[in-house]
Image (cartoon, rainbow, N blue to C red; front, side):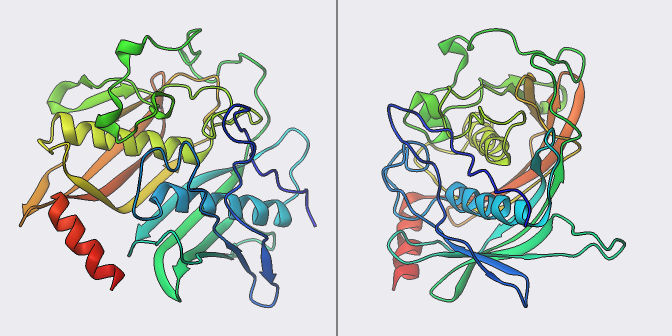
Length: 320
């Protein structure tokens, strides 16, 4: 056995004492499968920031990441100055998950054919009532060492002290959040060739996205910033009404190295074409993550923007 996996709890003393979203992990050693039930904390101030009629995709992702953490630390024994981080994720959503029906997550390791040592690459799925809700492909890595406090990894990467002024933060409705502390990007800025960029905001201390006990940001934080960036872009430049419902289809993102918490980060994107048909608009936004002028990672998010009446019809059909 390796080290005991950290559960990455960084709860707010005023709101929640535990951010764990998976139950006990079970292993099928003969097939190498790790499995855990997803917990659905309907009172969680981040995952259920506003009323939802399904389990949000970002909660499914965090369930996968927590199961990965447990499984990865069981397979690899990092040295004292190393951390395991997720450097690549590719997930496709196939159906909604209902809140009151048990949900299972399973991960299967993908062995490194060129090495006898264990790798940190996994594939898996999330399923409900024996039906696959999404498929996952992810890979982890080890940090070389923890950076010195306030250290610099790239020119201009030190974060200025304090939080950005409130007027630099978009209204929550544009990123589908009610609580201001859950808005983790700044307002958009126009770039040449119709592109746009935005700075990333540090989550408050104690927020599940803050990762205070780790030197590098979690993949959950990075994916949430991309999700909010895509929504803000769609509503600001894509002509998508605030009354539209969004259905997440796929998410992929890969990092060149860990993203350390002292770095000042921004996302950059070019506007992508959107295709509309019958009250439904499908779009893909491709993004690049920067620390200063250094590109750290890239990925894309694909989603549907649908009229709320169409969404209600689709949800009714799925529940039948």
